[in-house]
Length: 538
Ligand SMILES: [Zn+2]
Image (cartoon, rainbow, N blue to C red):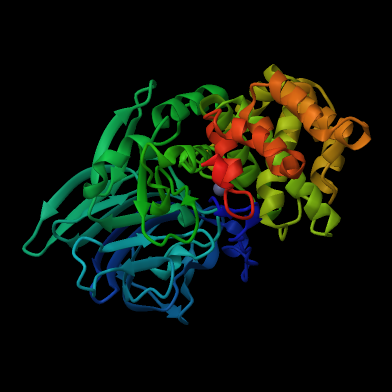
């Protein structure tokens, strides 16, 4: 998942919920396949569905249960026969003896009017073409619209058939097997091959066109867009194939799913959500080629894609291992940004993030990456720095090999932070005890170490620190010092910061020349200064 960020402040926090019930009786049951068939009526905001699960138990148990929130359950069958069950509006419990190593199938007929996790937009207004339905499972629970498993550890191969009003596009997890037209509706049948957690189930319905590309490895990439926005497809999805190729190469494990779709939706709750093979993202990221420079989808694009491995292929055991999701997704989006938006963007962004984390520490908001209730700045940015520094410490080869072995060992399963560390320790024959203490256990962000790394890695950052020191300690005129640094750098971000921090020391003449340099970042910095833009700059 990816949050919206504004001025470095986190607007949306991922709220962890404590799991209220223990898992299935000692996790004795294993649900293998799920087949969902549902009719979605967006005008009435209802779902009428049927779901079938195949499962087995590895020891004899007296009951199994599913999560099903506020549903009408009309029929339940076990292996095609009536079965005793209870339903309290929250859990559907099927009581009887289930014998070890026997296979069972459950059929559940249900209907519901989801209070959350499925959202209906624009169906009862007069604006044509703005109708959408979309889902959000993480933090909201898909058990609001399909009896399923809130526990991330229950991984199921799903197929999903959605009957939806005609003339709309329906996009869901897996491969589109077929569509069947009826009088008023069309049924869309998607099928997955590999298992995943229920929170990653998703679909979106609305007016969409799409463009198909292929990754170098041959994975189909579907880029959805609003039919009236076709000219924005290229800038919105710029670098998509390149990001995909980069991540597959960097991570070293082939993309685990059949295809990859990206779908913009209205009024989304987050910046993006990495449902398996089908990322939904806020349509506020749709951009044209001019606005691209200011704000684009590259970060979220790479972040959600990275989750297809870190979160979807290997899933956290519980929230204390949430670093495995958000830290890793953020880290890979940083790598993509470095590659496609450039080093100047990358290193200064990191310096800003380091400052945010240092400020959070100072204000008492620093947290351990192992704390399930840590804020998102910790899980995302501190988590990504932890990986950056871990790679520095172990070296590229050890880091990449260890990570690849970890992903391979825990594919389609759940893992903990310690599983990851143990794998890297084994691969590199290096103890990570100190890393664990400093980066994962401690509430404090190792700011000095990160700053040193940034100064060492990117000369303009080093120059910036030198300039700052010189401006504090030198008797020389500020403008003379700034001019010296200004003239010796080609870093737009460095110049931008000189303007933002020292514009009061700079003459109109200097600012005018800066403005006329046609450097986009510099002009942007000048325009953002408080007060009207001096007339002679216009
Ligand atoms: Zn995320």
